[in-house]
Image (tube, rainbow, N blue to C red; front, side, top):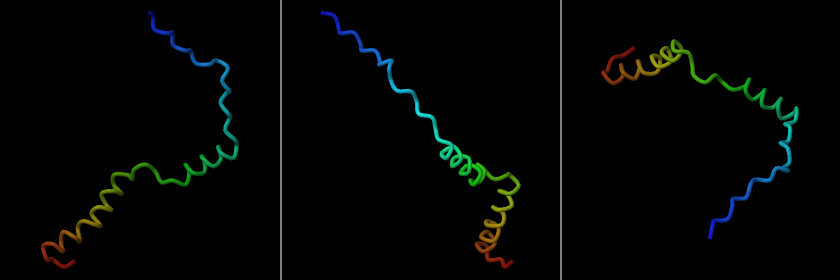
Length: 64
């Protein structure tokens, strides 16, 4: 016996709902409120130096 033929997906499915203007505005506002993906390289280096340098000096018993 042959295997039964696969059932094709229904073609009369409901169309995608359109997003509301309220939802689109909420997404837009959320994106503007979030910080950028990664800080700039100079800012990251400055911040790490600000954090790590005092800790390094404390480990070797130097005073600032």
